Length: 125
Image (spheres, rainbow, N blue to C red):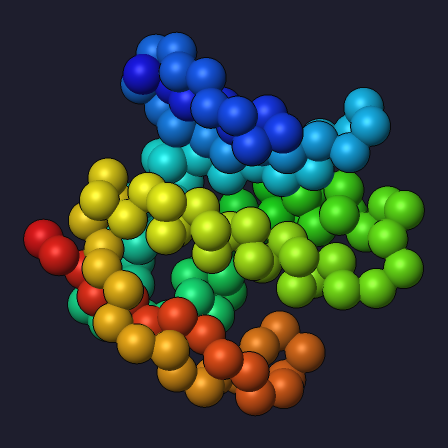
C-alpha cells in the first residue's frame, strides 16, 4: 500500500509509504519508505539521525534539496531543523516497517558543524 500524509492525515494506496506536508500549494516534504530502507541498508548496525540525514543527502540529493528548499520558502529561520525533524518523525513513525529501534539520545555533529542532540537507532533485523 502507498501511504501519503497530507497535512498530517494518512491515506493509503498501493505498497509505498511516503510523508508529505503542505504550505499553501507548495509541497513541504517527501521521503518514501523505499528511500529510507535503502539509506538504512547502507548504515552500520547502530547509527544516529545525523548519520541517516548525511546518507540521505548523499544518496537522494535532489529529493533532499527539494524538501529543504520547500521549507526555506517563506521561512525566516530554522528550516534545516524543521525539515530534519520531519525526517526524524518519519523514522520514528515507521520504525517497525524500517526494522529499526530507538536506543537513546546522543550528542552528535549536525549539518552546521555544531554539537546537537540526535536519536540513536539500532537495526532490529
